[in-house]
Image 1 (cartoon, helix red, strand yellow):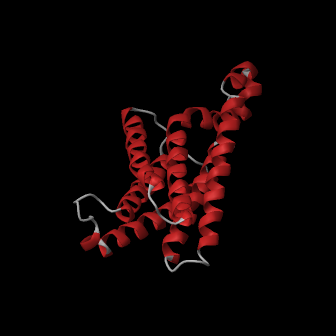
Image 2 (tube, helix red, strand yellow):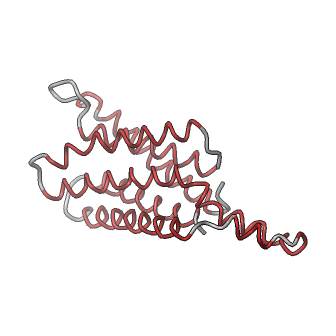
Image 3 (cartoon, one colour):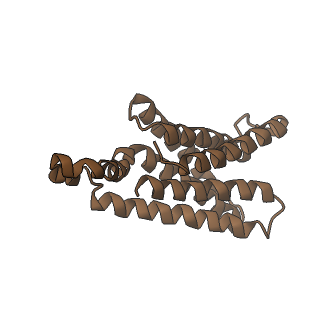
Length: 200
């Protein structure tokens, strides 16, 4: 679980992105499928971010790693793989970069789910610090610290998420789908912030 006020701030942010994706899905329901019956890329991205928003809110308030967590890892891996063909299509470079950013956010989400115990270890150590002098548990506290390699990998995903947020913010000024880009930028910024807070 995250500490206050980050729990409330991030919950509000991801609730907003989830609601926007749900509204957009309803608005585009008649055009949700292509001529061959498969979901359109637009619909797939909306569903991906709707599910991601819900999963992020759950992670804010719980810190349990169980079968459901690994099921989410599989789901977001499937979403990422489903978006990859779009990277190979003959589309504008801007569209391919946006797709790559979506795939990158899925990778960051998978990392967050899988590495949550490692990332939260530092927070738990900080919470136990006030009682460490009473119990003489200095070595136990060190044992629960987040490994250095996990800190480095986490910072890479923070940078990736932040770069995606900047990309979509810049895109706000060059495209008509400004609400979409704002939603994606908020999701990416929230991802970067949550990774930092979890690893604090």
